[in-house]
Every structure is written in structure tokens, then in C-alpha cells.
Length: 215
Ligand SMILES: Cc1cc2nc3c(=O)[nH]c(=O)nc-3n(C[C@H](O)[C@H](O)[C@H](O)COP(=O)(O)O)c2cc1C
Image (cartoon, rainbow, N blue to C red):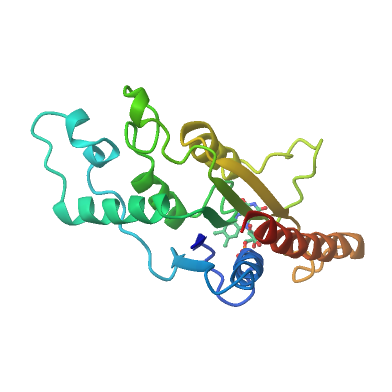
């Protein structure tokens, strides 16, 4: 039973492009058959509490002496990690907020990136349980960030997620990008609006194709 873990983090409940594109992916996934399950976690509508204790970044054996993190948060962390480990494919909507990822998504990352549990540390036998697992980022940005430009990279959203999901957790990362998402609303030149629409159409197509390929 192939499971898609679908995360959204946009705070825009009216016109979000990342929510629209992840929905296209999830719909294409469901269409692959009744056995194709989608677990949807909306990190904006139901935000996770910030990590209340740095000790939770490590398993108990690597925590400082006297550490006593909240049992409730420890249970939440176990649930989130189990949900991720049970997924065959991870899909994340990543709007660019102040050159970074939304804090709601960062909170999720803070729970699931755990050295010696989900990321390598000192036990080769327990390294990278998610190695090779596909992760698809749907990155939406109001600005341009074209290849070759000084702002080619979107600041700290996709690069940080790549460091964590691909480099640390070993996941196989794909990124679907739609830029200039605010061009039409903010009265940008027609050329930019045309690019906005073309990129969004291509993002929906790429999402549906990725779901069919990975499902
Ligand atoms: C709090 C906030 C911060 C933003 N910061 C940036 C930014 O740094 N760079 C940028 O290009 N767009 C920025 N934007 C615009 C969003 O990236 C853009 O609206 C994008 O489409 C959001 O994704 P969504 O459509 O899925 O909501 C920001 C929007 C919000 C609400």
C-alpha cells in the first residue's frame, strides 16, 4: 500500500500556489488506485508547537545529564518520525517567506531531524533509514530567482531543506518551482505575468507526472 505523506505550510488559504500544486500531486497519486494512500498534514492550520527542549534533537543516550524533555513532546516527535518512516514518498509545499521556509515547516523539521535516529551519527547499522526515499518539494516564490541571476537560489528555504532531507537524511530530492507568483496581483509587466502563468502550468504538469512516476 504506497503511502504519500503530504505536508502543506502556506499561510494563504485563498490563493496559495504551493497548496494548489501539492493538491495536483496528491490527486494524481490517489488516481493511481484505491491502495494509494495520502496522509495529509497541514502545518499551518494545525501548527506543531516549537521544540520546547533542545534535548529532543538527540535520542536519550546522547542527551545531556539531567535532561528531562516533555513527555508529551517526546510522544509527538515519535509520532511524526513514525509518520515519515511509514511514507513511501514525501511531498512538501514550501512557500518562500522572508528568504526562508515558513516557521511552521521549520518546526516539523526540528522534530524529525534527529542525529543517530533519522540522520547519521555513530552507528553505521542505524544510519539513514530514509536513504533513497523520494521527497518532492513544491517551492513557490513571489520573486524571480532565475537561473544565472544573483538571486538564483531562493535564500534559505530549498537550500536548507536540501541539506537536511538529501544530505543528512539521504532522501532523493526533486524540486518543482513556480516563481513570480504575485506578478498578476501586483500589476507586474505583461511579460512577468505570462512567465508566472507558464511556470505555474508547468509546475502542475510536473507534479502530476512525478506522482505517476513515483507512485
Ligand atoms: C510572510 C511572507 C514573506 C514573504 N517573503 C518572500 C520573500 O522573501 N521572497 C519572495 O520572493 N517572496 C516572498 N513572499 C511571497 C511568497 O513567496 C509568495 O506569495 C508565494 O506564492 C507563497 O506561496 P503560496 O502561493 O503557496 O502561498 C512572502 C510572502 C509572505 C506571506
